[in-house]
Image (tube, rainbow, N blue to C red; front, side, top):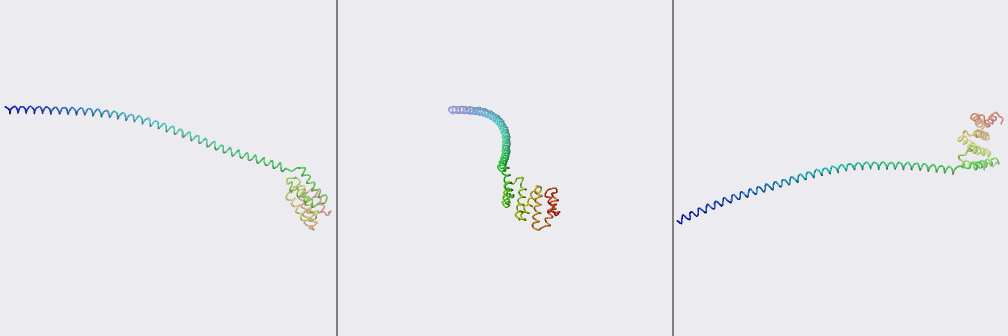
Length: 251
């Protein structure tokens, strides 16, 4: 009897334990299923957030690229403006330099002209003083002061280099040396007149004076050739008439 009770009790306990084990498996499955649902929900949420982030990043990237393109266009525009302005500055600078050079050249020309005019005005001889100097030298010759006359006429030549009476002054220098019997110097003085002023009215007289010097020196042939040259170069002049008379033996 006791054995039977014990056996029954054992069977009951075994059956309860089996039911308890079955209950634990169901709970575990439910827990796993719930966990799986949560994981899937979390994964979906993460994926949705990631998609939103990617979309936001993409949108921002597009906006950033647009802004970068706009900045590049603005930079290109500004560079173009800067190049234009630099070219304008270079052009203005070059024009300013050209204007300065032109203005400087004009000023220098005006200054040079002004200086030349001042110099010309300062150096312009007094015609009255010039005439008096010539007459004074000629009066010395007329008075027989030949050496003084030579010195006065030489001073006249140096003082009035643009005078219309230079050839006449040179003639009287030669004539004064002839009067002093310095025939070689007289000839040299008259030859200077013929070389420097061949068209002068005093040129025929200078040749006549040279012939006189040659005759005084005993150079009759040379004197005759000079007289013939005088007739050839300056016919019709008073000096040529005297040369003709001399060649004819009248003097």
